[in-house]
Length: 460
Image 1 (cartoon, rainbow, N blue to C red):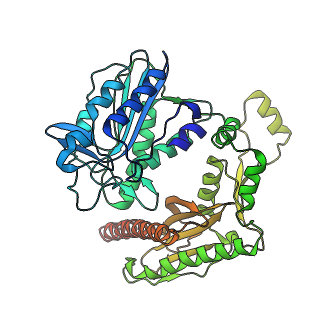
Image 2: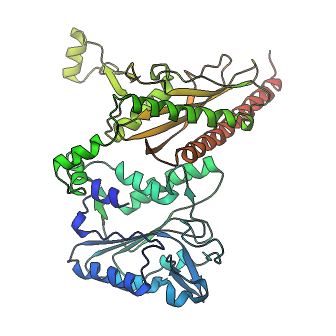
């Protein structure tokens, strides 16, 4: 959240106070409230005051509290933060007061397993009913739902997609909470559909006119903001980069091979979980990026373009427009003819020295049922990698993964030398198989309905 507000939005580093809650660095409720009050007192007329909390919410004797690492469930009133105190501090006139809560029973578990589980009943109901003016509260879920986390996303689901929506916002445009809510709800809904659960982000506010909670930075300012968060000089930053193996080194290439093999092992281990209704299932050997199917290439290219990313592989969109003839030129100037259609070619290529990075988990049609494919593509950057996963099902009589409709696509990113790679890969593969099973089942059911309809036809 901090990186998103500083790097992608117009929040200044000097105006942000970040406190990562942990047992090693405890803060008392009074200290927390005083920090929030100091930030509020520094604000000026017209400012936006944004408070973000990720953790647990608990209701005790009808009062909502934010749980801290040092909270004692037997003494909640003295060791947790009353939400009412935060609401009072953030009720400042002539300002925009924003509160973001990623909290409920299954959020980030900062408590010992033996502690009593927090009760979410009524928690979000209370944080959403502040009668003050000029306030916005965006909660991760309804008061009868759980706020979920996803190890593959390495965040709470709400936080992850909230930040993603802000980063994808139109450059140099105001972020209106009503529009933000729609985009985040769509993303969370898609995640819930793939994970067979329910979570509904909830916005409550008192808004007069078009109230903006942030402004998206132009692309040119994003790099400047990112540099501002790291005040070290250029030489020190260069030395930090050189501490990581170069993309041309054998160590870097070997690490990519290890990651691809980790993906392949995880996919092979889950083949038995694929619901193929008797059709053969296989895992392909790793292949080069050039063989990525067209539907998946377009999703990869869009992913890279939207983030203005610079991967080690070459990912681009090439547009071609047929030359205009004399009649076409005349029609263009008079407005009486349509412009020639633009042909887009999606290119995904990798340097010759880098190892294969693409593999498939495929359900092969038996001539009756459709085919289905889960695509796994490891896209390398200088210090990070992204596993890009796609799911496609082809219900035609001659199935081909290269022409199937892409029905699900999601990225999972992590540091190239991260310690928890196996867990992240496993979560990504599990989600891919769940999605493939869901899409394939729907395609089979559509096929059966079509056959039933054909059997009921009267031909003359």
